[in-house]
Amino acid sequence: MAEQTNTAATRRTANATKRSTTAKKAAANRSRNQAAAARKRSTAARKAAETRAELAKTPVDRAQEYAERAVLVPVGALLVARDNVVSTVEGLRESVTSREKAEKELAAQRKRLQADIKRFERRGRSERNRVERRVKKARTRVEREIRSTRKDVSAQADLIGARVENLVQTGVTRGTQVATKVQERVASVA
Image 1: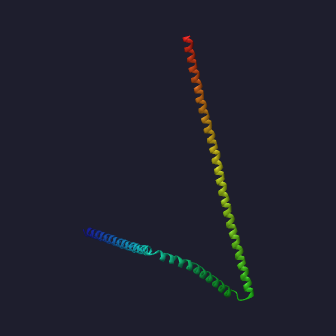
Image 2: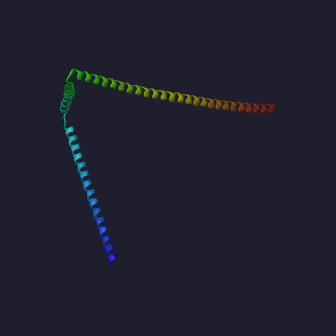
Image 3: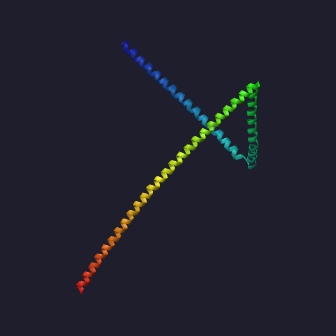
């Protein structure tokens, strides 16, 4: 009897734990869904605000914006190029402290440049070969289709010719039959 009570208590505890776990999972899901909905609302609100701001712009505002871009883009590109040159010069100045080091660095740069040129050439050659293969395949396919179409047209022409010949022969046969009947009637009347 005591065993049954322990078993029942264990089952009740297990069921209570399962219910608790399920409730916790549901609460977590609700929390995640609410957070996602809040994110969607804030994103939608931001997009709506951007749209309203964009629609509120006058033609003068738009022209001013385009003019600013026309000035800022080249200035930004120039600054990026300047930064690249400065960093390259700084790198060279730090790495090259003597004539021998400068010559070694120059040789290494030349070697890298030659490797890059070879790599570009290989890439160009492989692309050219790929295009040539595609063109050959397309040409072969078109020629095959033309031959097939020519055969189909020839077969269709033969069929039409045979049908026309059959119709003509049928007409000749009927004409001969009619002429024979007419001659028989003329002979029977005479």
